[in-house]
Length: 367
Image (tube, rainbow, N blue to C red; front, side, top):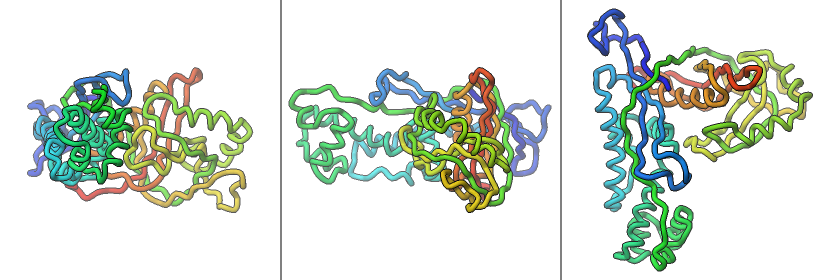
């Protein structure tokens, strides 16, 4: 897992800043690539058998530079506390803008950061927590089912019953009558764990408009391990088709690529995306074979990340680290467009060299 990094940094008054008293490297900061453990009091009820803690990486920049990494964690946990207070007294809705304000970030980055750390979208976590609290009230029997439904924001008893059954596997009436065992989404909290040491290699390049040409399929997003939908799709293409696609490559990144487009903003596992097994080409639309799919990509800036390691874990860690570490620590944000992965496997297909291209745009300093 990524650890300490050295990044150029200066204080507002122009003097060199160092995280530690050591001034052997003036003008730099030793910044912690912090690891956050999402602690759960029980195993994940939605995915039984998974461990009680999920480790993800997040880089806290300005706060860490000032020795305030604890403050960052406190802000994140305060946002989670706010969710719990609204669930306990749901007269007021849970507003993501307020959660982002508490965490001292934008709504966009709060959603992305939460999803990367927790492994589920913010909206899904809130839904599960709401139905967990509602489940306890159903079993307690102190309110009618309709009162519970309205209390937790459902417009009708039927809507509440559908949502309740989708999570708990049983309707609220049956659960109350039979004292059924219900599923629970434990409350999450963040703690700091520092381990490992690595750096992230990247560059930012400008590209003119280009075309992606190959074969396309719609597949579910898989966070860990091989994506069965992609594996089956590529296997079915056949050598001749892949060689024809490869012959069209005349731009960077070169060679056969994995291109992901139209991803769900939440990036939740199971949501769908367009996958292209394709190449970058300057060929005009008229020159693209009729049996191949084509995607025009507008001109713009691209952040290009490099990584090497076990396949496919290193590739998936790279994707995660880009969004949880690099974006929070650099004056860029992702912009609409496909994400392009160039992979070169070892002979035994256990190791890979990867190059990940993400469309980006520069943000104002201080955003």
